[in-house]
Amino acid sequence: MARKERIVKYMDKELPAMQECGESKSNWAQAAAMTDAEIEAVIAGDDDEAAMVVDWSKASVELPQPKAVLNMRVDYEVLEFFRSQGKGYQTKINAVLRSYVDQRMLHGRG
Image (cartoon, rainbow, N blue to C red; front, side, top):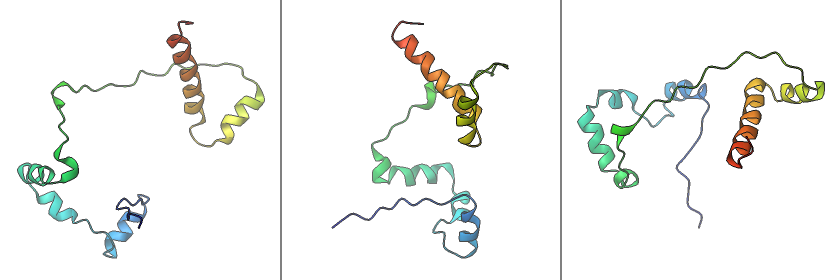
């Protein structure tokens, strides 16, 4: 018999309507009223979290580097391919270029 998954996915726009209809099983008012000690106790009692120990004392915030403005010429078909991918096409172009650079650096061809 297949195990029933407990993980479900909803779009952010669906959640308020679910809460109004009583379909959400989360009690956000109760959660918001919990103290840090109560939250820690609930986490400690969760079998999935019991073995997880996170040391936040050495955590650091890595801010992204600012992007450089670039005016360059590319083949029309290349640009249209990325534009056809929808919103964020410039970010995808940057990701492809980043991957190329990372591979070149990894193999000592930088």
